[in-house]
Length: 477
Ligand code: UDP
Image (tube, rainbow, N blue to C red; front, side, top):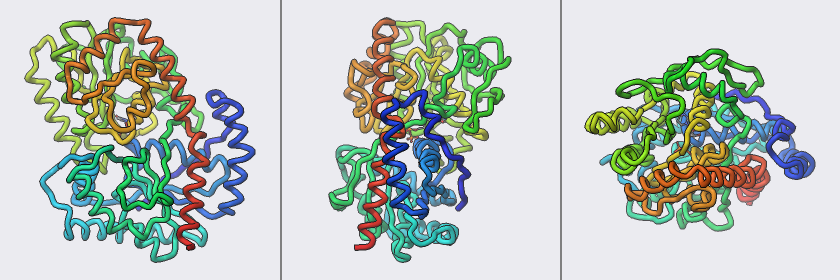
């Protein structure tokens, strides 16, 4: 287990995007209340990766803000081996209602989870002082709950995944997790009420929506010159190259764009004025990049002049997601089988993760340059990529699954496709938007407003405060 270094985010920094009454509330009521209640005790977060994927992204948003309001927040990352991450990926799939691989979730698997937790626990325990609360994120951390409870430490377990309708796979996964969590967790936090298993008592269940950091390199304003420089320099589109293109890091310094994308394509990069349909996701079957590509090839390519860009992290670099490489290979094989003229308009882009801030800034540039952002997911706990695109006033076409349905009001702040497997409907929605600039603009503007109203981080701080206090209460009683 290792600790992630964080710098406080000053509340005043948010003044350019968060309305003053909300900041004032945070500064003068929520913040002082939280400081008084915690009285210097630490709030220690544990998850399984410091970068790549939505959970790391959310922690990078929220935790610096809690430091900024004067709380003693820390972030540790649990380390595991390939056997462990293969198993937790299986759990991830089953919690989404899918089989994933053929493996079991039995005693042997529980022992693997326990072994990894035991190896990580000493570092965590050494950091804990009396009065502290630990927030564990997602299934990977579940066995730590019992170890912490045995030491009298209040535990919040935050689950970022789930599906609305249970099936045999979700039931199997929840039964497996129950042995680690039940009786050891003071407070459970989910993204949607329907995601919680029925053995979570209602008085221990809290719903908190994720949020994005509007000032992070991933979301900050970028000039047109920075966007074109970043995208052409990295090889994603044609153009002048990096030049002076840069972005502002979290510490306020400006950095040049330097990274090269790894791109599977035929022919050259698209010119800057080619309309792009973009999906940014981990290479995960549930993100259904393959379905998005097929929908584009069959229902969009011959009706528009757009190109499709499927963008994901470099597959060697997301340690808690061992499946990425094989998923990308599968998509590449499918791409190779397409007719050449369609192939030339589909680009498979992998972005290096060595410098997460620059990776984020490049994602930002890609999202801002997109004409339309797609999220073709078959299941989605929340879908931060949707929030990120909406904040950038992009019209999003997405499957009406999980948290995406909460974010997008169909035809108002985005376009929802009711059946995630209906490729024709997906293609039709994309073509409709590509052909109508007025609708794109109207939906984009509404999307931006929705994110400012609901998904900026100040909105969830007091809910987190309540979750922590409730965990303390439940642990003492
Ligand atoms: N992401 C990224 N670089 C990439 C691909 C994805 O930074 O190359 C980020 C993306 O911008 C988003 C997060 O990873 O912030 C994915 O979160 P989401 O909730 O959409 O899905 P998850 O990966 O958690 O299932």
